[in-house]
Image (tube, rainbow, N blue to C red; front, side):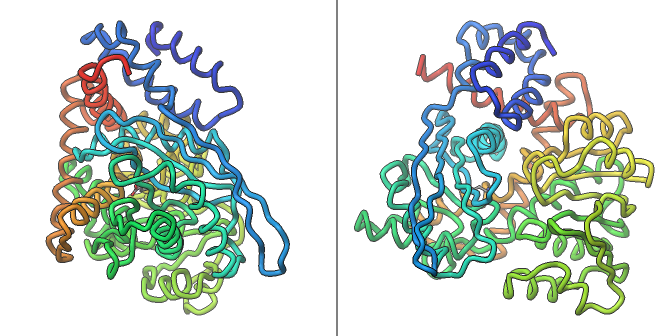
Length: 445
Ligand code: GLU
């Protein structure tokens, strides 16, 4: 890392102790930014990096609620409003027991660059709670969401901060959150949240967008080697919204998707994942992958273990951060991996990224490859602002254009900085320069 940037990085790490994921996200971005600062010393003079690493606002609040047995439960809520240089803070809410400030800050930091890369007018933010929705009834989830919004509502708005979903937050949760926001404020402010239901301000393609976008980006990478998804053997991690829609899109493009996973294990289905059954088990019944394997002849379920043991030519990690380490990366490379697109946020450890880059694997980092979700959220905001709703075809076309555009921006930036094919460099520099220019223009804020 550039010595000037390393000094700034060390100060940031010391100011934010104990936040390992945030440190990792910062270090990865800083490693790309040396050459930009050689060309743009004004960014250093204006302390752009120091400002970028300090969120504009951080909100932490108590979320009290009662469970179905009438017991009082207390969770912690977060919203980190990281950067508004390009637009209102934009980013999802994650409900998962692992959520703490360091997770929200890593996600919010990534979101700044991701949102910039989409070319849409959105800043970066993220939020969530350590609430664990697993095993909770709809009524419990509703009471939790209502309590969460009873504090959050005062901090958000269509021109201020626009939350959406992430792990543990889907259409059901967005519905409860929107209902409570509307009740408290007495405003039908559609653009305050994205990922809404289609009959009340949501956008077609938003549910599919992250997974679809990841596959479209990966397809663009494959094209640079004269390949496509046709005939590829694909392994996907996760089995939530991103994974399911990535599987569907990869299959539509002619790939064989032979494995996916959940937090208990993974399923291998050499005949190709049955997407209708997977949707039933995961989205309708909110069940486990084990149930899929039991009902699907020929599929086998491997309790524990790593889905990255299954050989593939294309890997799509769509579960969570740091789910793919250096050893797993080495196994994938040995087994003939050609390309990897990150559907999750920071699923590959820094060791894993180094292994892929060393081996010449096409590696699409999450802030580029999974930007289709937030980009379609921006399309949802656009429809809300014009009180319009677009067709599936039109919206998917917009998403495709955006993903192809992000790929182009990353690839041409990597070329410009003398490291062709380095999408990590391209994404980090491409996102950073846009935000840094806007921050410079807007003065010391
Ligand atoms: N949580 C998603 C992400 O990581 C989407 C955020 C949004 O739509 O605002 O980008």
